[in-house]
Length: 237
Length: 263
Ligand SMILES: Nc1ncnc2c1ncn2[C@@H]1O[C@H](COP(=O)(O)OP(=O)(O)O)[C@@H](O)[C@H]1O
Picture 1 (cartoon, protein in one colour):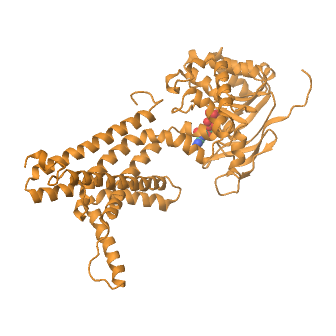
Picture 2 (spheres, protein in one colour):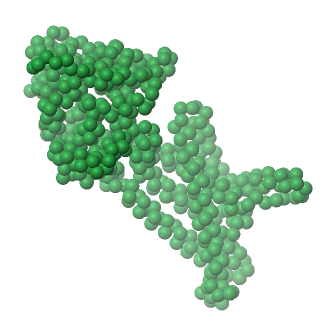
Picture 3 (cartoon, chains in turn yellow, purple):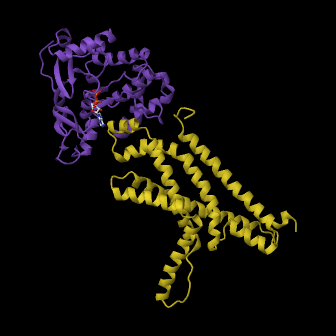
């Protein structure tokens, strides 16, 4: 079989499987990214809180997750939630190991890991805000919500977007780690194909191409978004 | 001038303000009636900006009270904690009546000049978009930068930005204008164009409080002058009298020292 038959969409080609796996990679990365954004917002908000305990928690979160390998976090989430689920199943008479849903635990693990990065990015964006412009918002009668929506968010977005884009690229690549807990995403699918056809190079090369395609497309999207939020900023800043 | 009783537009009484252990205002009282143009003078660090910022609660006084157009701002000044407005909504309402122009302009950099001027009328006051736009365009015309309405603040000179900021203040239809060193951040050749706009506003009888280092301007434009020294008012009165006949040594010294630089 030549390469195009191998990756083709005929009955014995792998095209459908590779595409489905690509979709799975995008899906798990996207959910993980979204969860990370939520954790990042909470982390950044906590880091600016007046409550000492919250600031401490935010610092502990970012420090801990920078120190633990991401793969280990995925294992901790998977086996942690699996043992909880197994324990519950045992109450209902089941015996032995019950695996946690790989998609959910994987997305959650990636979310927690990338949330630590997002916390730093969002913190930086808030610190970069022009205090005088925020003060002008208050002086012109804006309440906290209006101030956030009309002044803080659009201004923080332009400082945050480049960093947020980087985190997304990282999340994309880290989603490959979820293959270790059995989710059939692009990495896992390539391994399976490589193993069963004994043409590993074709599969890994295809996977690499597909990863590049996703990061290229999302990179373009981020660039457009950045151009939108950068309006009004002096060039070169 | 006919001797009509004018209402107090801004009234400060017994204002004390601390920053941490440092008290920078030691009980300042000041009333601006409608139509008054009050210059607040004093050497740097005497508390002028802090006093002005107490009017719209950007700084909350530790004791004393503030009224705008006869309405007193209710404050929570219990000892042992940071003072704060008792009712943030009331403060936001009163901020619409006393619009501030800042030393560093503080235009919103992500909005065009026109959007800057429309922002508060539209989103804070909830007025109609068409009405806000028409009024904003008229105001930009008036301060002479209508041609820049679709530019962003960073594309304008400092003088143009400050004129836009004045239009932004006027767009709220405020009862009082607060100027916090409006020309101190400008290159000398741009000061004149901003002072001219403020002068025109004074001429139409607007109530204004102006913190400034431009002595000649203060002398020309303001009806009353307040001289602040180390957090206390040392001298105040009608501008012409105070400049012609300074009573306190402090103010006399201040005028003498400044005379060289501003004439
Ligand atoms: N936010 C602040 N925190 C601490 N100290 C401040 C703050 N704002 C002003 N001050 C201090 O208060 C004093 C008066 O400042 P300011 O009102 O700006 O004086 P002026 O406007 O007359 O130059 C100065 O000593 C200044 O350092």
